[in-house]
Each structure stands twice: as C-alpha cells, then as structure tokens.
Image (tube, rainbow, N blue to C red; front, side):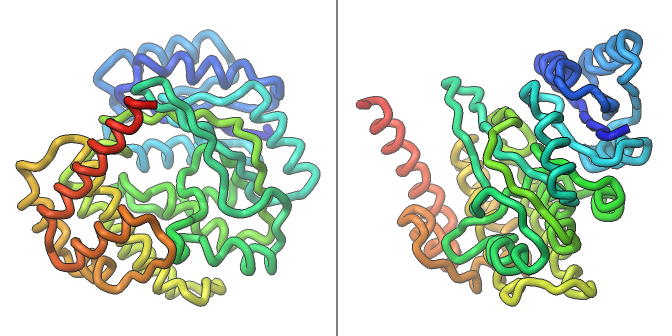
Length: 344
C-alpha cells in the first residue's frame, strides 16, 4: 500500500460526498481511504458506511466526538500506507493529487512532499491560490535549515510556512511520531504542531507549487469562526512549541522570537475573527482571555518589520491593552474594504 488518505468528518454532511468522490476518482490507484466519523450528529456516519460497503478501498471508523486531533490519530493508528495524506471532510483534491505525489516521492525520496492549495471561499465563491513562501524544489537538510527555518513559524515580515496539514504527503513513521504526540485537547494549531517537527526531523522535503488541494473556507467553521476558547487553544499551542526547545534537533537560531511572532499573529487573527463574527459585546471577555501571560508576552515582545499598516496599528493598540479601540479600528478597515470592493 503506497498511500493512506485519512478523512475526518464532523458536521460536514453537505460536503462529505464531494470530498470522498474526489479521492476515489484519483488516477493513481494504490491507496486506502480511511473515513473517521468523529461522532458527527448529522448524516456523516451513514454516508461513511455507505462508501465502506460500496468500495473495498474504504475503511470506516466511528468514535465518540473527541475533536479533530483525536479523529486524525484514530485514522493514523490503522493506516497501512507508506505515506499518509490528510483531507478535511469539507475539502477535496484534484484527480492527479496522488499521482503527482507518487512521482515526486519516487523522484526525490523526500520524507514530506507538499503542494500549493486553492482556498475556496464559501461567501462570494471567490478562490485564491496559496503557495509556500519558499521556491519550488527539493530541499535537503542544509537547504531546509537555510531557506525554510527562517520562516518555519513566522518571519519578521509575517510570512510563514503553511501550517495546515492538507496538501501534504508525509512518510508514515514520521507522521506517527509527531502527529500522535499532539495533545487531543488542542484543536487550533494542531496542524502546525505536527508539521513543524516533521520539518525539523526531515532530511529531504519537496515543495511543489501545483495547487492540487482545494481548501474550503467556511466563515463559521472551527478554524475560521470566532470562539472564546481559541485564546486558550493558542496558549496551549505556545506551551507545546516551547517544549521543542528541549529536543535534540537543531532549531532555527531565532526560534524564541518566531514563537513570539506566532503568538502575536494568532492574537491579531483572533481579533479579526471577532470582528467578522460581530463580537463587540464580548470585547471585555476577549481582553481578559488575552491577558494570559504567554499571550501578553507575545504581544509585548514580538518584533515585525515591513508588515501592513493594518497589522502594525493593531499591534500598537493591543500592546497598550486598547482592545476596544483595536476592535473598532479593524471594523473600520472591514467596512472600508467592503466599500472599495463595491465600487470595483
């Protein structure tokens, strides 16, 4: 078995069939598909079972709802493929995804092969192709350290290697080692906590700019909607990142600063989500949630250069605990952007 493709499903009944069909239609056929129903309350369990009965390549796992991290672990524990790929239940892949992954792995013997991604926004039906900040090609250990490490978490210009796990093929022993160790209670930043150690341990990585993974952006999804508990999730992720400093790997020279930048960036992102979800009435709770020592340290000490005026002004306000002003500023930016788009 060459590939194990793991799909997690929770409340994605409207998208799951499209996702699974895109995998079963692959032009490369040496793969298994593992569907993990994470206790979904909709029709996802029945959809998974129907595919399991229809196609011998499909394995189905049902479990009580424990979150996306636990669901991915459940799939990974039964995977038999040489390499694994994860696909969210509301995403899909192009027909040549597995074939191109196979070709690059055989050509380079890379432990991880990553492809660019098409972001498909649910509202407005807009799309955007997202690439890694590094050029396409094979990176061996020294090149990984010289080119990828400076942007592993976040560089001073707020550019970073893509955090999400979608669109990647990872050598299964490495995936097992690093993704099975991610804490199950972490559901924001869990991709990053698995991908970063894979970069640190890999001897060869191949980056490809072909956009073969289609990542659906749903405004109210766990990854893109605002949740008050997200501040605690980011705090836990930061604690786990700090533990990497105890490892035997050669870390980026500025890893401490990259951790600070990542934390500050996530606070900025959560403020944007709060504005998009109209959470003005909860600004006091948000201020309190972001007073956690690690988050405050990141906001206070992170240093950026050449970032957008929007980000720079927001950080200035957050550093001074002016959360209401930061919220109103971001709301103003959103309205101006909407007016500008309407005139185009």
